Structures are given as C-alpha cells and as structure tokens.
Length: 67
Image (cartoon, rainbow, N blue to C red; front, top):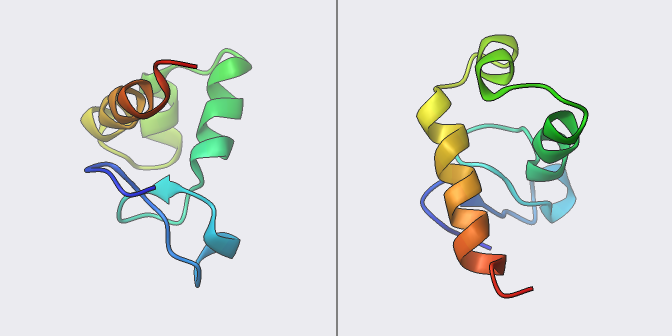
C-alpha cells in the first residue's frame, strides 16, 4: 500500500505499512488510537505533525472504506 501518507517497503518493518517518512507502523498507531490516545497525544509522543496522522486516516478510509 502506497498513498500520500502511508507506504510499504519490504526492507523496513517486515513490509508492514508505515507512516510515510517514519518507521512507525500504521497498525501500531491504530492500536494506540483504539486504546484512546488522541491524535494530539500521538503527535507529541512520536514527534509527528497532526496533519500526517489525519492524512493516514483519510488514506485508509479511501483504501478500505468499502469493507
């Protein structure tokens, strides 16, 4: 999966989808969100721009919205 905010590289994190430009897996971020962590808290803890996290969610909804 390669979108503006999510990318996959077989040589990084075992090919898991990651936040573009970072070695943070999408599954890790989604797990953190499912446990109640806010975008604001994630962006502070991982030193990320909130817009990148919002972009990830938008890209995932476009990619998997019909599930």
